[in-house]
Length: 296
Ligand SMILES: *[C@@H]1O[C@H](CO)[C@@H](O)[C@H](O)[C@H]1NC(C)=O
Ligand SMILES: *[C@@H]1O[C@H](CO)[C@@H](O)[C@H](O)[C@H]1NC(C)=O
Ligand SMILES: *[C@@H]1O[C@H](CO)[C@@H](O)[C@H](O)[C@H]1NC(C)=O
Image (cartoon, rainbow, N blue to C red; front, side, top):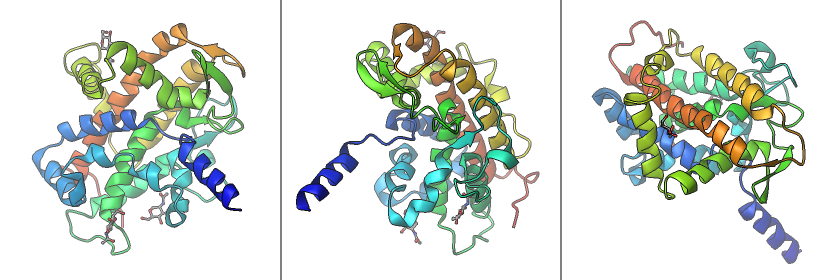
């Protein structure tokens, strides 16, 4: 029995978590966002962060992945992704946003709206005691990253590519994991000397002065915070179909060609997640959101 528990324990420790942008992806999204906060939002975020984060949101951007297997937080596990019908290549909120038991709104798009709604009460001081706004901030920050990872809005039968086994260069991986981590880690190694800060600076440079600087204002377009996550999820399933699944079968080996053509997409999604998280937080905590009504 002891041996069995030890093995189970080791498996739990050693199994890479299956559903998440890598730690690095989430941290870059949150760093980009925090750097774009206006003073009022910046102060609110610092107030909500626990002391041990020392004011750094990115330090807790993977918190939602760390707690998802704890008993108390089991209800959050379906909030990291969306399963859409195989090959449909579309996201329809009323059809797809639910957990495996069919409970409505329990998907990443619903979660972003949920925690946005909770946080909108912060500045009015009308927060419901049931809601922990520190947790709402950490969930929102994490799920804004996840909804931008194309394979987090994937097909149902392959669990967003998790059951599509393949090789990434010489080691075993799966299609979901390629998009969560492999592409990011290969880029870090090949282009950035394994330095996340350099990677992040390159992203920032590309939306301030470089290739995306003309697009970045359209990334921020959002008339209604509570429905924009549906648009982000739709973008993701479209990218998943066009760039993730296309031409892939079980047992393939992916290497340079896949990496070089997909890296720009991964990079852009990390940056978009960061820019949009900042836009959300600036609206949620800022003074200029009279057009956005906090639902009760
Ligand atoms: C919204 O958050 C509350 C807890 O703060 C939770 O009980 C509820 O299930 C969440 N719903 C969604 C769609 O995230
Ligand atoms: C809110 O959640 C954070 C993170 O789980 C926790 O450390 C803190 O104690 C909670 N606050 C309250 C008032 O329960
Ligand atoms: C930034 O843009 C340059 C030029 O288009 C490109 O080579 C580089 O890979 C981009 N970096 C990121 C992180 O997007």
